[in-house]
Length: 534
Image 1: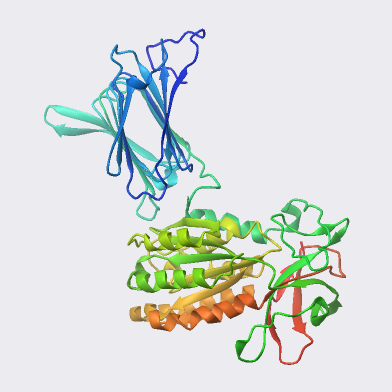
Image 2: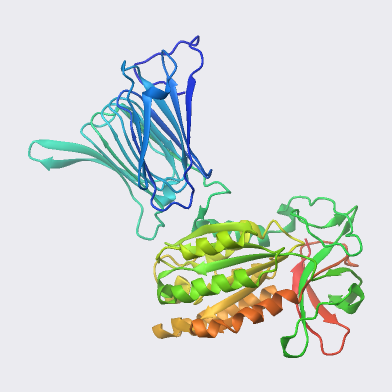
């Protein structure tokens, strides 16, 4: 525990942790706030992705008791009051769920907050302050009657500190962030203080399991997909799949001793788009750079799908909210019992995980129903990269599909603020390398803007689909969506996992062209047109 200034704690004091209170509050609770008041002690808050709020009391000279801390609830606000009758200082350690807001106040105790801050309003008279947050996405404001004796700011970030004349007789010291309107501001920290001992700001690295990610993280994802083979880590050994068994591994495939395997996702369909579900390995023909290859494995119906649905909830699609919810419900309904479904959203200029891969259909439907009315900028290309990386990228060899429900209008197309960091050209290149079929459900409502935005958006979505081996579907209204569901269902049922060992085992990073055919009359296939031999 960090000592509160002016106090000492003997190393012989036993059992610091004296109180553990668990408050069951689901993460889905909207606008939940934790209100903490600890007049004579410190407050330390760690923001987590866990599902429960935890409050620990830490005594200095004695153990904390249940009577020292009062916890009550009024609607979506949980109140924590530290009121020791003997005025013995009790420090609070709090694990705060990710989607909570925080109000915290103390007299002379320290306050520290670390993590993905959604909103924090903090007050102290003379305590020290320590905030660790992702400052590239967090607004900050501190107003103090007197400047702290120590000010520590994170390197690489700009803040403004100055004195401000409030009245003729009163001047305060302020510290502000310098984020521009182009920055995605997810979090907000506001502090009021009298004479704080110190203020320390440190940058917080966004964790991999964070339910929110930001456009500037997308370029690194595509660079990882397209990077030179010399920079890629060695891949683990993998065995040939047994006859009749699916290739399903969360690891990158592709060695058996010194022999590399290539996994493909292939759609096969007959006249009128009828799915073909009885193909065997010997029915497939694969030609790599002009050389025929022997197919080792092919499987379809008995292999579950990982189905990720990305909802574009940016400003340009606001009139389409009912259609988008209907589409999400429709895709959840068409999934097979063994399939797993994830739902993501582009909202407020950032990528949000609504639900990671799950087979809990009813919970998903309820979550879709509760989606708020949000909007914001449209860095669509960045968000597509983030959506692929969230669950599907680590599941190579499995049957993966990414359904994008959007009007296709990235801010690169409309030339508005916060365009994607990645270009459509680079995203299409990466799509050819992704372990997923991409199925854009293109909302034609963007045609109302004119200026060719919708036409260009549709072209880009089609390019993504074709590069991955998927297909684009267009819809103007909810009525137009009804025939889309069975079409996508047919697509999914016609998808095979196909694997082969290339005759050319010199994996030098060069692009290899692929041709995939089925030696059965009337059957057409769609697959990636090639891969980088890494």
